[in-house]
Length: 195
Image 1 (tube, rainbow, N blue to C red):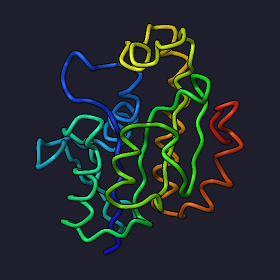
Image 2: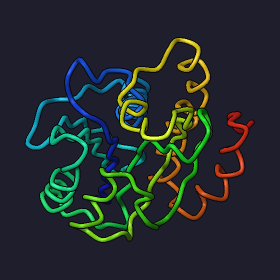
Image 3: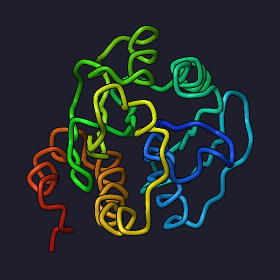
Image 4: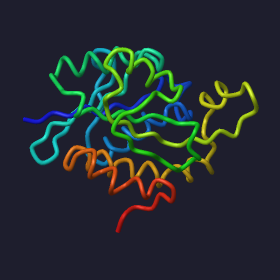
């Protein structure tokens, strides 16, 4: 059976709930809710499992904290014998406005510590879905910004992108990265679900 690993990046703990840096967790929570599955506390992270048309899907929210996310990703890829081509990592991105997203087949870490650590351990040849969180902060204010909580208005602005991200995960598993990029990246700037 084909297996896929979908990773949402974030930090564990109540104090990080609904922070911008936890947008990856939020996407996986939405996918799990839509799939009626729950996360269990496992090695290196919280894991949920489901299957889509005969393909096994593992959802992983690393419990290693952001800067050591690669430990969890590498462990679960090896444990389940999943190829990097079947890995999708969902992260926040200050380079994109809030509510926009961009799906890429590979690339640099863009200064994101979680992606940076994954890259150190497994290389940069894996798909990533970058969720825009905006960058409305003063010079030197990035850490406070990414660790700051979304306000209600921002959550409303983010929600359509989270909904589309759930569809993107499904499409990635069923149709592959190239088809999914063609289908969804054009929506990334407007973020409306395809008809």
